Image (cartoon, rainbow, N blue to C red; front, top):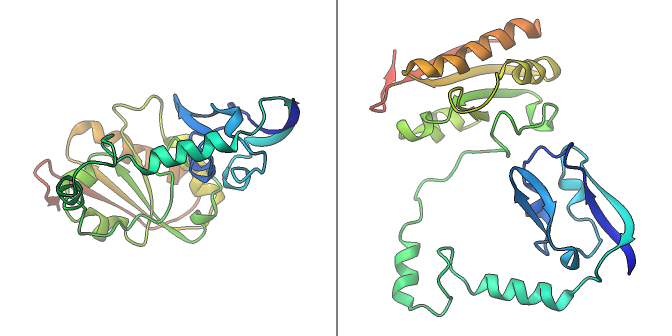
Length: 228
């Protein structure tokens, strides 16, 4: 049948996953870092995912597509609701469920935005306005126990690993700093030499942006100490 359905432009998609979260029918999945409409019969054509996309990669189109199957959507939701995160059926004993709950983290996350990966974040996201920017190496949050409260709190957080990620962060960071009103920049890196790449990228970005912004570098040791 010919009906209205969404279309995802993979070239515009930045892989943030916000559309998949916004889709109440679970018609969208993230595959190889890109959003894909994997179940056309789950898409109701209402477009709750459109306003969630920061890059305008999602539009409507009218084309041949399977009819919206509400019964299949409800059945999938029911199955999901009765399955524990580990994949165990919801009929497991109460003792197992209580044990799973006991692993909940006691400390609240201080993260205020998503995505956080440098390569995924939109350069003109509204949360950059008047932001204190934290640019952190991936490992820092694992090495330093109080990282959320001391670094992420009241900051917009960007993370990356210069050793594992392809390319340089300089161009992306330059765009973010040049096109937004950034109040300050904090760089959190590990003491290992490869982390120098993220520090150098921020330095070059600040220079290329032409702006004078207060900034600092915090180095964390591999045993979880801040190195003065």
